[in-house]
Image 1 (tube, rainbow, N blue to C red):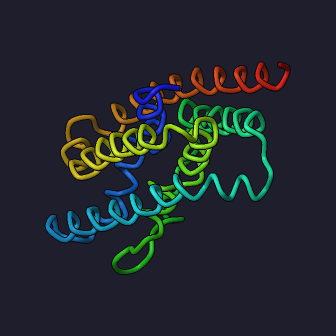
Image 2 (cartoon, helix red, strand yellow; image 1 turned 180 degrees about the horizontal axis):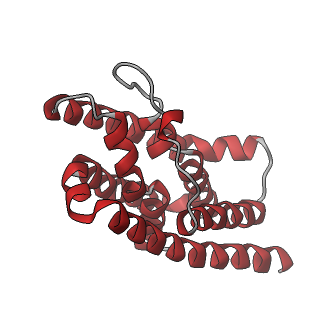
Length: 194
């Protein structure tokens, strides 16, 4: 996996376009200035979580004695399931996320930005090629910046694309993610058989 493939994959897994309606629904009771401050705060928290997991996740996997092939195969399966969910979305229950007051950490940072799938992807890329941590850090920064721009401009994105446009773009991103996950799964099987 190269830097740009990693960045695109992380961006697809973070799914900022799919998160736009959820962010807007959770933050609908706040004025634009307060909403922007909350989004910036949650983006910074999620970045801290993601960068920490990128560097410490490998030690956790080493402690659990997981082989590279098993990480690649399981990562491919997880990304495949995420892609399927993006292509064939179920009913999103925003009420599951809604709470009273200013949302802090949950649900905006975790699980919407720094969710289990993003953490699994970071584990996968850091475990596969631990000597390229600077590349993976840059890939994470690129994906996070692109996600941040979309979420900070969520109101404008929603005005332009509406529900149907955002749904179509999320499904296209899901199809790309499915193709990438199948390749990751096949690479893991080939590495195991060799």
